[in-house]
Length: 261
Image 1 (tube, rainbow, N blue to C red):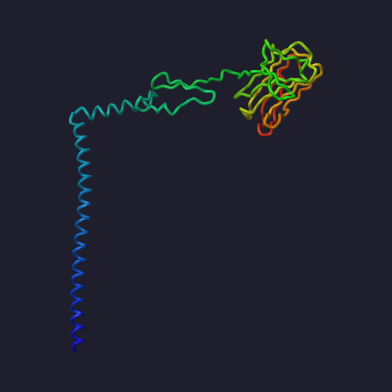
Image 2: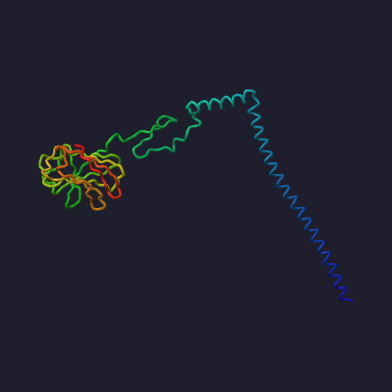
């Protein structure tokens, strides 16, 4: 009987504790709802305040009876400027993102306007140097004061650097009056600027006595120099050859060679 009584008392205590726990859970749920409701109310109050501020600002702008009409007229004027091609300054692009590139310059001297200029006038004229065939180095500048000696063609060649765009190498007033004692070798150094498909390289030669020798053009310096044109004397039209090289395949160094004169 004592054990049964003790069990009944323990059961009563457990039921009371369970009731208290249920009551605490209900109170916690109510408290959570209050807190969440307060946060949502605060957010709603903030949004309402923002709308009030925006409405107040709009109301101030429209207090004048002519304010709305002025805004409409301003928008209409800008639309008309867009239609007839006169773009308002406010709608122009940011010209700071436009800059010079290869062969072009950008002039921004006039505020709000840009002018793109082509800086390639025609040919890029190559500077000429004397090339020592044996040592494979340049040994001096070639010009009207320092001529290329045709009688030493077996020892020296003509060296020029490949530049961007269409190149022109002029041997006018560069060669002396001697006959060639070997082929005239012209070296085009492409180590800085590589060949591009369709790129043109023109060679103008003053009166020359080839003496039965060929005119050769070599390039691909990094590959040990590759002969891309070997012109036989029988192919020459005059004693003042004018040769045009057109790059067809820059990877495999394929060129078309035309003798224009």
